Length: 275
Ligand SMILES: Nc1nc2c(ncn2[C@@H]2O[C@H](COP(=O)(O)OP(=O)(O)OP(=O)(O)O)[C@@H](O)[C@H]2O)c(=O)[nH]1
Image (cartoon, rainbow, N blue to C red; front, side, top):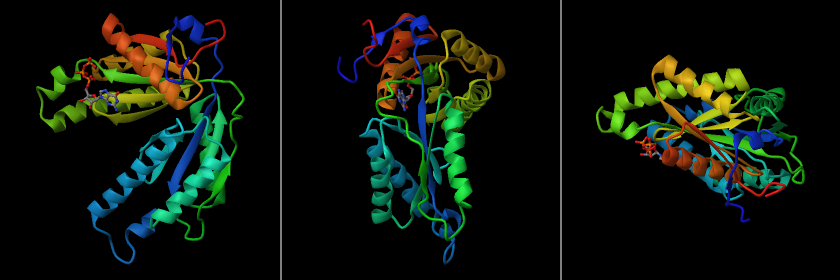
């Protein structure tokens, strides 16, 4: 099968896979002081720099089948299964060559995404503060073996009928509040219950990097958000060796939800033994 093909599989099959997530924390070095040196810089210039840096990271990491999320822009979280030491060095060098700022990279691997991020973060924190002027371009990581053959699980959540309920009825700010409420509740629940990391990616979409979860876990998450803030979600869940493979399978599973009117669907992003 090609790398972007997928097979729809029952949830029970997904529980047999071994997941391991490699997380890279990208942190702009000494950014706070830079934003006010020698005096405060124009806000839209900072916004331009941040969004261009995110776009460049998305291009670089995406072309290697990884995912990156903008989170707070001065710190960004990437899922980098499939990217090794050399790729990370090239990324750091390329930013240094083209931007007025540099970035530090911490890399961690764990079956729980939150633990992988914790490890990645500790590596940077041990080297000094984000605002130490002499802490630059930290590079510290453990990398997942490319031959490990393990999988990632990525869940693509979407608000049901957001266009009809919000976009076509409410002004943009009130629509945004509704979507943000759903996001805040989901991200907290998934983090606290499962060590999953959920990121708002635009529109009404949230992508979560998850450990091995089953369909009951996802139903509980959806029910929790509906009960807490009255936002109705559906989710496509994908597995694969790279974030792109898993995330692309998740998008197809989400289409299956739309087609079948279900709340949770699973798909595998590559052939598994026995297929
Ligand atoms: N990042 C991202 N955003 C998307 C994607 N698909 C849709 N969107 C965004 O989500 C918005 C709403 O689109 P839909 O989710 O298809 O619309 P909906 O009204 O909620 O309809 P249903 O999802 O079918 O219930 C769009 O305007 C896009 O901004 C996607 O795959 N990725």
